[in-house]
Amino acid sequence: MKTSAPTTAAPARSRFLPKNFDSARPVAIIAGRGLYPQLTARALRAAGAPVRLIAFHDETAPELVDSFPAAEREIIKVGQVGHMLKALRRLEAGAALMAGQIRPRRLFDGLHPDLKAIAILASLKERNAASIFGAIAQEIEQLGIPLLDARAFLDHELATEGVMTGGKSRVDADSLEHGVRLARSVAQLDIGQSVVVSGGTVLAVEAFEGTDKMLRRAGEFGANEPLFVKTSKPKQDFRFDVPVFGRATLEVMREAKILAAALEAGATLILEKDAVLAEAKAANIQLIGY
Image (tube, rainbow, N blue to C red; front, side, top):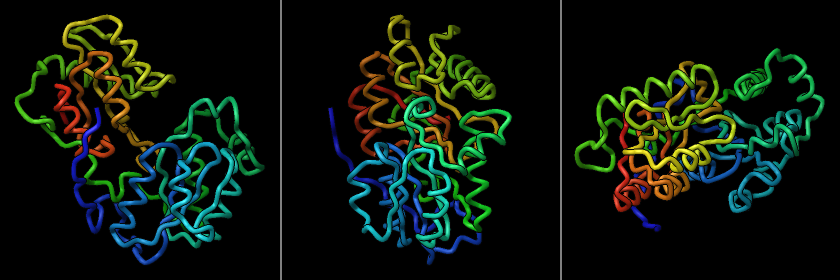
């Protein structure tokens, strides 16, 4: 079921911006898949910031690419780090912002590393998302281009504390504490950032397969009052790694009969937040910020 609701206006200045942020210079969005980069572009434009785009073949939404004039965008293949750095210079970016996911399978199939990417990979002792994107972030900032917190300009889309769908919490306090503690332990080990629990039982832990597949697995048990918990890592680098919740995940929860989710306030982006909260309430799904 789809419903629409008015979207809260983006703030004129996000609390996630550095103090020296120059709003007159272009912000280049390095855009992956999904709605996240589109909402970011919309929020930047609403705030009056000039926007540029670096898109990826077969990843970035075509409608987002088409919304930029050819002179204000660059389309590259996944893995072309050197090309991306040149594009940032050509677009005269004053800052960069990463938004949207690249399909995880690209690490194994469909990667097109250029010489810069090969050099970065060769320099890393561990090759995981945090180390790879951290190294890319360093390359960007060595150009004198700050990589912004990826929550910037989307303050209004973040989870907030309390029952966001209204009413009193149906989630037992001990279950919530148990779920949050486990989710944070899993995140600290860099396995995933979500779990599903029922009472004192762990039903599922998120790993490489992603949140939605984890939820489907958890729903197969028919457990009593399952709770989905999403958290950030203890040392989350919000420049390239932001927990996200959206309509697709809400629909999977409904199908799996998981009727409660706890999302870390201030850290989890709820894409199209007003509409998601309205749809969750209509589906009797409770969304809680902790």
